Length: 410
Image (tube, rainbow, N blue to C red; front, side):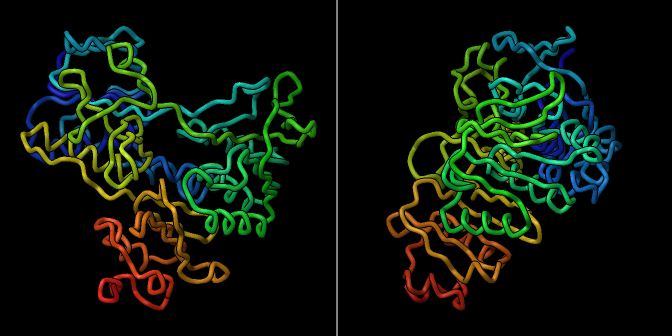
């Protein structure tokens, strides 16, 4: 089977690339290959609304089923690509099907990073990456008495918030000395630790898991390196993802943290692009020149747009301001920019009010903002991030002063 464009990965990035190609007027043939049997859907709500049972799965479909037919996008779901022959412009799936392509867009995201310790494969040990993962958790909830979440990042904390609201006793285990340590400053970390504890979640910091305890089939607890054992009949592991790029590495690309792409999302293989969670790129909003991967809807959308335009002859280099969000309890965290490498933080407002912002700076320039229940700062802060604005620190700390007026003070 030959297609002008083959998109591997039916998540947010892949779906956006296919839809935007048609929006840009691309008339060639398009095929999308996805491991899951589901039509493309939003993943962020899995650990929030879907786990909580507040919305049905159909609510999260990115497009209705009719869209893919109407746009003549051939969907090949429940298929896993296992090999790419870059020279022949051909790929093959685990089922033995082959596709020849003019251009290949790799948008596979990643697989949850698994525990490697004893007991990691017991029933009741879960990740939160796709619908099946959460469906298994939902099926176990009626008999679940105690939950342990391993990892104090966004996925773990969002799941903890939902399960706590459902009345389940939850313990969060974080190996570092604060939650969100890899992505946020201490003021935000301490705020979320306090919020979770106020909702009855047992947040434990600086603890290391030794192994998972079970009865031979199902998990019964989590053993820590200090010798203690926490009873649990559900364990949720949220310790990051492993980029799903092995076929590209075997085809000749360097491995490591995803695959490297340029400003047009091109890899070093001819006519092969990579977008979304699996694509490492140099980002001007990240301090330093080291390539990074961004696991976000924003990045998936914007890189898909770059590739779609490139394939119709429009060169529009990737230069989007990163943004993220997280919903926990009645708190909406909105982040703009990347705080990596910051050397100063300024808190705007009082965290006790549950509406405040943390501004990250490096050498006086604004890198990023974390805004909790403060949409105004999030919206206005984007311009400061984009320009690398150097504010007056006293004015920046004055929560009564709108960020858009800071330029007049400087």
